[in-house]
Image 1 (spheres, rainbow, N blue to C red):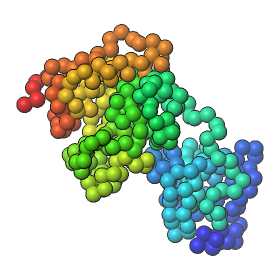
Image 2 (cartoon, helix red, strand yellow; image 1 turned 135 degrees about the vertical axis):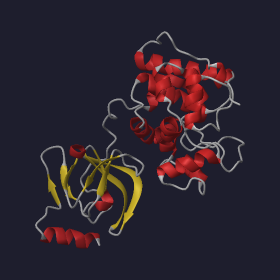
Image 3 (cartoon, rainbow, N blue to C red; image 1 turned 180 degrees about the horizontal axis):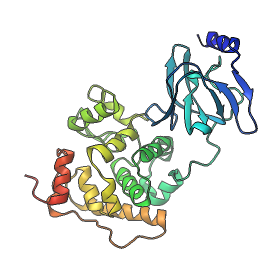
Image 4 (tube, rainbow, N blue to C red; image 1 turned 135 degrees about the horizontal axis):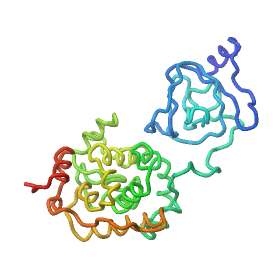
Length: 311
């Protein structure tokens, strides 16, 4: 099928490959409605959509999610700077599954603002217990942070401090000793059918039927983003340096863990900005000291704002 499309494109006088000036190589896509994504993962945000066969200038390629179409399959994604994202090679009109003559992305520095392994090791020290796993997950985690507007030092510090205590920043971790069907999994340690169900519905996957997806490379970071921005609205608490409310929003009862997480939050801010500002709040309001796990977002928002007991 792919070779037939290549022949048809050539017969129509469309260029399949050619050398572009200096930085890129030109390829031709086929099909309509081909998504350009912010990263080489099906869970990454769609930047734009190609309405039909399009010439694309590719500067590098990287491995990501496997995409299978009628013309074949490929794990490789072409980076197209002019479009600000990646196109799966499965929809590029070549007979190979990897672009010939195109370098692999990764030797270049990460995009500005992305968190690196060296960053989180400097922030959290020995809490980064499995650096290779953390490194593998960072591209998807950085994408989730971009998607969630976790784009300031305070927001990054709160998010990363939370995840390093929940999962050691390991996308594939399962809560030790938890044998419940919907026990803690992944970056955010998603717990309970009341979370698995809505998260799966939001992302378009069956988490209730296949809960281990919550600790897969493809979905662990998007689930953390869902919890941070949809199940709860946590960025405003980070903006206010209110780690007490951040911890309450995660859903465990108050205790000594709150201070440990707040210390990690301050360490991250110190690393990201050079100092810790006045006004960091490590303790929770009295009405948020209990277990808030089962509260809906409106219930939690009302409690966090207006006060009151947990029932």
